Length: 533
Image 1: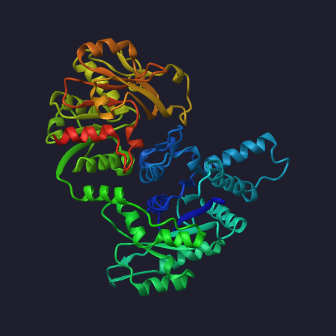
Image 2: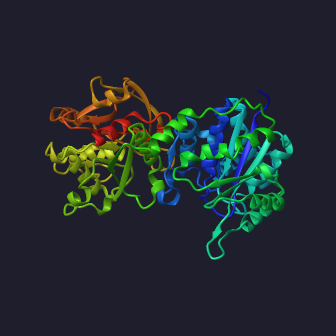
Image 3: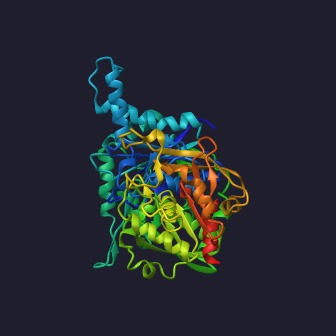
């Protein structure tokens, strides 16, 4: 195929309308037609990456296979497309400015005054085009974070305007996602916010080619005609995106609305037949017609904001569908768990997940949840800090190391069963300094984990500083908790499990990052299966 085509997805009226889901759904439809597609996210905030952001601020921090800490929307892209993203798929204002300032310090601009236009916008355009040229994609979908009209996103909108001018309209396309609110007082849908939002785009020199209208009520043909007329787009380019029970229905909805057909026509792409979405529809069928229901407890310290555990939630949904089961997730704040109430709080759960996190807030609650799962033979899955809590709990209550802890929480503990990696000692920077991205793991044959994976070599993604302390491994294995997975290069413990327990696995990595709709993660599938049985 000829040159890469670029699609830009912008949002108006309000944030959190689902630009990431629309981008991923369109990507899925184009991919199903045989196009080589990727999606990138441009984030207007000045943080270099979301790695140092509190989950309450920005939801989960997603980690790519090459070790980039990125926006959670990249998780959606991977789950929908089944294609791994990289560092190049997430660009922030912080990274753009950092690059431009470094170049200026080195004298790359030869004494010129460095300005937003052309220097910042040129760097943004370079990052947008980098994906298409480097990896030879047919289509690059670029989601622009925030809302049109925000001061922060102005340089991105200007960069898109320039790219359309440089490449021509048959190579670039703007999809604008807006809200059509329903006013119950008058019983009608209102299009004025959409008109205003498009006006803001026009003031910045961009005429959107397609409008996607988020709504909770059906949009009539008359309303579509009104939007088309007032916003200067053709009728076929007014697309309805109505509320659905699951995000995984959106590609099917967008196919019904012929979003992919309109895009192909406008970008002069070959049609390549009709998208084949049979496996996707099969997944939806299983998701909507479960044969069982199972109650799982997710123990975390950011549970007020569900987006903090986005990938874990989605992995549970994938694994539930695979097991023909609806998974009822009970979110439990680890700070609320104590010696007086933990049996009452955790009663009735068929499985317990202790979630990742940093710092000592709520740590004792997590340790009590592990104790409850271990003593009551309830399937237990510990992820990252969840594994570390399981290790600490076992040391205290089985090995008799009363004051065992992680040196992250207690620097002076006499039993540092979890300790800082040697290469991490002396590092004071927080950003991008952990063990990040994909690392190999060799799985011990005959273990529960081996049964789940059905292979002995895997690569899983990491995001942490502290590790299991191998000085204690012999004591653990003698007492019945074994290392089921080891990093072959560093000999670091990646997986601990208890063979005597129904299902008890702790992993140092983040399996949730690599679960997709059509390939649910084997450990989640195995865990949910154990919880059902």
